[in-house]
Image (cartoon, rainbow, N blue to C red; front, side, top):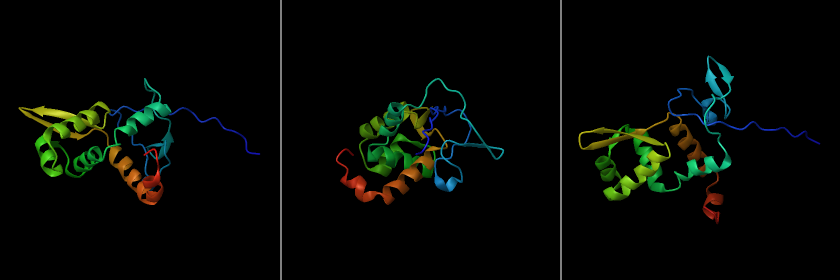
Length: 151
């Protein structure tokens, strides 16, 4: 009989913290480890803990294909203004702006205003790792994901 181990509650890192979190198996680290000088350390203290409800809300920000496409474009091309996203995605400006608002509120992107233009970029260097991991998982489990009645 296996002994039950209590899992420590995960903590949320703020985008300002430069620590690198290994989310992708190819990153060479286990999930939840932060690499600094070759050693794994605990995540820094934060005002919020990453409860299952909070994680679900964060991931819900990726539940629309347009938001995923926006993040992919920003990762690939860097900072872009709204009209560039509208042009590349072929969707109305109002719809793109609504999706950007969602991504901004959830902390996926940040905005910089210059004159009449709003430039968006990915806020956290871990976002590309998370999307790469999600794509790998989706590809590996496509039949199940497509057949899921809740997705």
